[in-house]
Each structure stands twice: as C-alpha cells, then as structure tokens.
Length: 638
Ligand SMILES: Nc1nc2c(c(=O)[nH]1)N[C@H]1C(S)=C(S)[C@@H](COP(=O)(O)O)O[C@H]1N2
Ligand SMILES: Cc1nc(=O)[nH]c2[nH]cnc12
Ligand code: MOS
Image 1 (cartoon, rainbow, N blue to C red):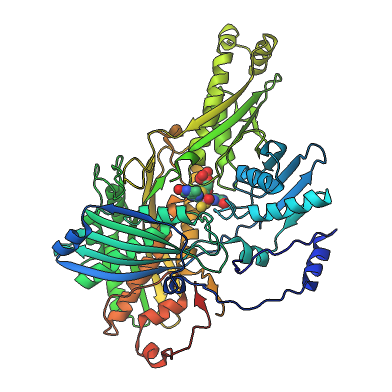
Image 2 (cartoon, rainbow, N blue to C red):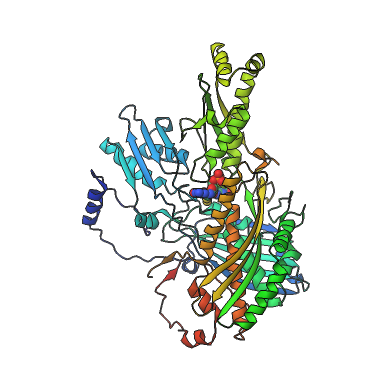
C-alpha cells in the first residue's frame, strides 16, 4: 500500500455535513510511521521515480560543450502553488434507481473523465451515466483530474445507499487532498561563446509527482518543451525525471510545467550574464530565436514576433532611462534597493497528447426561433461560454440574445477532452461554428425566399418543411502530431507570445518587496472578446506573481484558429516572473554593495525570507546558523 498525505481512507455519509464531520472525529486511525519520501531531493537520493523515460536531444551536446569558451553549471529550484479556486471540490451524485442510471453534478474541468471513471468503478457502461457541469468557481487545472476521486467515493456511497449524496470539501480538506502545482528542480550545464552566444544546454529536469502519476508526465513534457523559452541553442539535451514521493499527487496548474521550464531558463540567463559580467538583456536579445529557426523539438517558428514585442516593451517602458535612474537610486540607498527586469515568453498551444485536440458541439434551433448551443468545454470563469455564444450568433447571423447556453453535459457532447491547455476557445469555437454553418446552410433557401421575414418566421417555415434544425459540430486540430522517439512532427499548432518589464523595490532588512510598475505586451491575435482577454492576461499575471514571490507549498516536519484569436488562458502567467527577476536584480545590487559575488542562485518563490538571506549583508552573515550533522529543517521544501 502506498501511503501519502491526505489519502482518502473512508467515506462517512450522514444526514448533514456537520454530523458527518463529527463522526469523522470519532474514527480512530492507527498509524505506524513508515519510511517516507517527501521532497525532490529525497526522491533523487532514494532513486524514487515513476517509470518515465522522456528526453529531447538536438545537435551534439558533447561537441557543443567542448567548443564553448565558457561552461557554466547550476541548479534552479522552483516551488509549487495551491490552486485556491474559490469553489472547493464539490460533487452531487444522484442514483436514478432504474437501469443503473446515475446523474453526476460535479465541479470538474473533465466531465467525460468523471463519467468514464465512475462507470468503471461501478462496473457499468458509460451510457448509463451523465455528468453535468453548469460552471466552476475556478479550476486553474486543479479540477482537471483531481475532482474525480471525490466523485468516485460518492458514487460508491450512492450505489450502496441508493440515495443522492453531496459533498463539498472544506478549504483545509481540499488543500491537503487535491494536489497542487509541481515543484521543480533543474540541474543544468550550459556552454556559451565569449561573445555571448548560447552553444549547448544540458538540463536534467525533476518534478515532484507525489504519490500517483496523474498528469505529471505531461507536465514534465511541457516543462521540457518550454525550457528553451525564447532562445536558440544549437545543441540541446533535456532529460526529464518524475519523482515519486509520499505527498499529495501534484497536478495541472495554469501553464502546466511550462512556467517551471521557463523559470529554469531565465535563471540560467541571469546567472550566466552575472558570471560573464555582461548585461542580461543584451544576452537575451543576442540569443532570441529568429523567424524560421527551429526549436529543440524541431518546430519551425512562424509568425515569430517575440523580438519585436521585446523591443516594443523595452521602448514603451523607457527601459534605458529607468535603468540609469535605478542604478543612481541604488548607489544612494543601502537598505532599499530597486530592480528592473524585461522577460519574454512563448507558450505552445495544443495538448501535447495528440488525441485530446478534438472537440464537439450540439446546436438546436427551436421553432420559436430561439437557439440552444452546447459544446465540450467547461466554463470556469475564463469566459469560454461567452465566446461560444458570440461565435454561434455571428455564424447564424442572429442577435446574441437569440442564443442560449445552458450547461456542459456528457449526453449533449460525448468524449470531450478536459477544458485545459488554453485551447478550449479554439477547439470548441470551431465545433460550434461548424454546427452553426451546417444549420445556416439548411436555412439559406428560406432566408432567400423570405428576405424581410424574422428569424422566427424563417425557422418556422423550415420546420413545416420538415428541415432538420439540429446539428452536431466537430473539430480536430490539423497539422499537429509530434513523435517523442524521433523528435519530429509539429508539437504545437501555434505559440502565444509576450513580454513584461517590471520594476520593484526591496527592503533589504525585512526582505519585503513592492512592485512599482509593470509594462506588459501579449500577442493574442484578433481577440473574440477583448474584455475577457484583458481579464485573463491580468489574472494570469497576478497568479504568476503569487507563484514566484509569495506562495510557498511547504511540508511540515519534517492563422488558423477561430477568428484567429489566440489561446490566452495560460500564456501570460509566466510574465509574473518579471517581478521575480526584478527582485533578483535588486538583490544583485544589494550584494554588490556588500562586496559579495554578484550572482545568486535565487530559488522561487522569492519570499521575504529568501530575499533577506540572498542579500547576505553583514547582519545576515552574523546570524546565519549552519546545520549540524543529523539536523533537518523544521520546514521541508518539497
Ligand atoms: N477565471 C478563471 N480563468 C482561468 C481559469 C480559471 O479557473 N478561472 N483557468 C485557467 C486555465 S488553467 C486554463 S487551461 C484556461 C482554460 O480555459 P481556456 O482553454 O478556454 O483558455 O483558463 C485559464 N483561466
Ligand atoms: C493534458 C494536458 N496536456 C497539455 O499539453 N497541456 C495541458 N494543460 C492542462 N492539461 C494539459
Ligand atoms: O491547462 Mo489548465 O487546466 S492547467
């Protein structure tokens, strides 16, 4: 039996939540402490991995490292993150008591996986189970798979008790049970020429999967395909390792390993620039991909705008002028330091698992002229349903209020992929558009015969002619299909790109930081709904800031898309790291004024404690405690 924190070992069903929770308190569990592994470092020490063999190799890494004028080595440690969606995990299961039918209302990004898994646990066919989702109070990836264990437990209860059962986790139960963003570790060796060109990048990437594989392989894959961020390196070897530990099973979280991969890269860029004594922005610009070059997974970059975006943000933010002002400020202040960072990002849009890049829709036109649409995507606050309604209204050429969307359900559209990977607007948008085009075609002769009649009269005429007024729509992303063994085939349909420039001030003595200004630019194509997309960019940015400055998940003791819009849900998150790198820049200044070596391997999140210690001034030096043999930290970073 594999034990882990937050493992569900039983289910107590009662008339009310209060009675059930009181009953839980009466259960006596006899624990015996077994050998356990919690952190990435402990998993490496104990060789505790899930059987995964993922690598991306391009060029000749040995040769590249040999030819390099300088070779640098280092380690980058990245923390996890709790989703903290406002609505905690919640499920209602209703046994229909006939033909073994069940109805599930779950707060899940994955109705189909809920349906299929509950069916397999109850030993019945999926066609007897419907999973329905109106909307989520946030998901952020945390309900892509981790909503299902709760549904499974309740399904077994409902099977035996033949009664509807509902459960919504309390916040503390949710945090300990449901899984978080993967913590990562990158161990890297990078070769550079003396004029600052990247020649070779050799990276071992580790993520903390927790007790079960869950989505951790796909998360590891995405970190490996984003560890180039925006830079061309001719010789690359990326090897991924999935650590198996006894903590909760870590899972999807906005960016899905991409931000973690890019965090490794941008720390590499900073630490190498520091060591070579060159400006990190020149170093970045000198190594940016140019249009037509291929990534390390052999995808040719088309519509490649990062160099333009990077320069635009640099100009609009008055980077050079402010750089001088900040250097002057820093020369006049010892206990307050300012930092400035300009960070680019690209994010691959497609599920890396090819079969998930498909979507369906179902549209009914009722003979009163009203339209009902449904599709495979779940509304979690990202504004998906609004965009789908816009597409339907535009394709059918009717006013927006004619169209309604009631819910997402497995008996409306089957075999849906999780709402994830920032692709839902693209793939469900096309499915809705395809269904509406079919219906528009069927109505065309009636529109031509009755050009000045209302939509209701036109639909009515078609109905009396016995025209089929329902249509299913389907879409599968073209052109993609990557082969990991051969490192060939297009991995992503396209990339969403951007850059952010942030200025911060740190209080060297408290380790506190303040964000003074951020200039941000995202290329989101031609937006379907500008207000939604701005909201997504702002929300993702702030969530990224939390991830790399505040939120610590410790363990105690021990074109071709729809409207050519672009996936916008996850890509902006990494730009929050511009705060982290501005903090790093300020720390560098603090260290220089204490005659420390300029560079620092700053681990994320840069909490006040981490910032304070990294400044490493004489006060810190005097109160540092070296760990004695056999001593372990009271708070273990997993
Ligand atoms: N308000 C809100 N925005 C959100 C989320 C959420 O849960 N709430 N999830 C994010 C994540 S993890 C993803 S993958 C995308 C999913 O929706 P999309 O595919 O339609 O972009 O929304 C992003 N934006
Ligand atoms: C399953 C999956 N594959 C991806 O490539 N990206 C994702 N984001 C969230 N889930 C996924
Ligand atoms: O792809 Mo989002 O659900 S992590």
